[in-house]
Length: 508
Image (cartoon, rainbow, N blue to C red):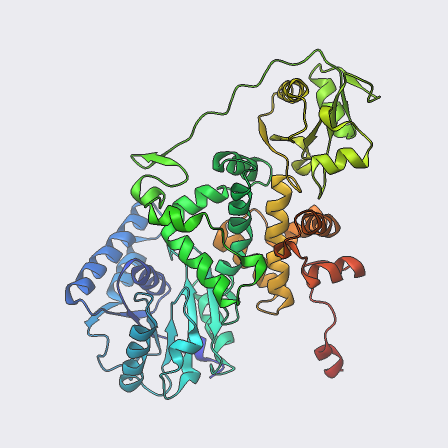
């Protein structure tokens, strides 16, 4: 069966909704004969028409030739009945709704009508592959192939073996995915698989920041985009996905890992779901939408640059302010506005550590190198006049300034540390290989870097310092650092490298 991927010529797709049509288009374009089946008789004809229309659009845009499009259309074979004889079919992929019993029943029927060498695959995004295969006489030929929507554009495919999947099958399925021009990653059959699990790092921490009253959704999103380089901020992403969907995923992954603190959802999501604040799909979520366009309040106007001198402990920030005409001084004498750059700590604690009077101290997050946005942290003991002077000084640089409440660590630091720590837990629990974690998150979530590589670029020791500061400052076990992270910092090893394992010794 090692040559199976090269020999696959006929595929049957069960379910011709959006996901099914995407898989059909991908496989037909890759040269496979694709049988279309659906429990709804008229759905198959509609799918043939819609896939053909997509191929015509690609031709019109010059992305494929008319000959290739015609050949792909000729490979579409409507069969209608999912349980039509399938002894000649090499691979069957189901793309029906997420219901464990319905999927079990489907595969039990497919096992009866297919040949003994026909591979069965589920496109489930959340159900256990092992659980789906539990009703099969031979669960060794079932594997998870989780595609992402839209399938032709989203190049990632999670390959998930169940507990009884044949050992040869995951690698063979990954080979097939590569033949189709997509990128496979191998994930354990664990809650959330790989992408949905890794994605909890950003969303859960953003919701925690909101719950603490540190900043509003738009402010968190601006920081996430401008400082961390994300295409969408966490609340924009929740609105895009739909909070009804995201809430269920948050709860299921948390419960699936037996209430693991680092995955703990926020109390904020349930009442918002009950209120129908889903996001883009119904016009209101963390933002309002008019004709599908996000409505966000403009950023508040900053005060004028102050005449008050400014002192900072960070030379880069001092140079930036001086270049903007701000009077930057080298001593923290009375009546001077004081700026600290907290790393893994609050502004209040940073002021105390430096022996500075808290009433005149503001925090400015050093993450991002003060390049695209500045984040000003305000604590309860700050003199308002000093705070406005600090805000005006930062605004004089021409960079946008987000003013937020002080926190055990600045917002960008909290978000990135959570993203990296979640990926380190995945690696440490051997739920996926480091390279697959980075590939999955980069392609599946659209982050600018894979989280382990991102942690390396930010500095693994810096990430560890932030997490330990958060754990100490909050007492919350959600911030406990992954042993994978702590161990590699101690040994000076990269987060992206597995390192020596017992297997290396056994292999000699």
